[in-house]
Length: 119
Ligand SMILES: [Mg+2]
Image 1 (cartoon, rainbow, N blue to C red):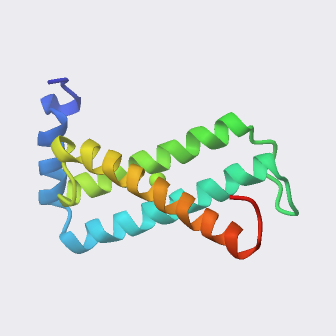
Image 2: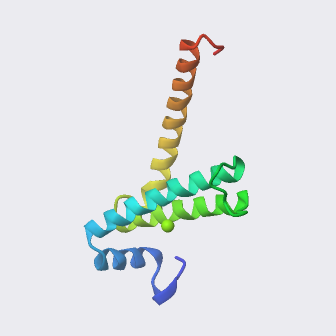
């Protein structure tokens, strides 16, 4: 396994974080990082569709990088809290992505039908 700072692999580092940070504080981290994901997504949108709150020249690529970084921060919080672990996370996410994608498409088609549009 890849080694990181302090001679610890990622699992050991997460374990140590969870010993140093209380469960309540980990929930705060998760909530804050989720908010940062939302902010980064809105900022990414503004690089594509500018509005009255300019991005100070931030590029689309930079904003996309920031969004993915915030998603990584959120994942670290979830890992440290023990809500997910890397052994089951990827399958869980893949299953949920499939489920949510089809559900979203179902809802869009239902909306189109209600509006009398093509399906
Ligand atoms: Mg963050």
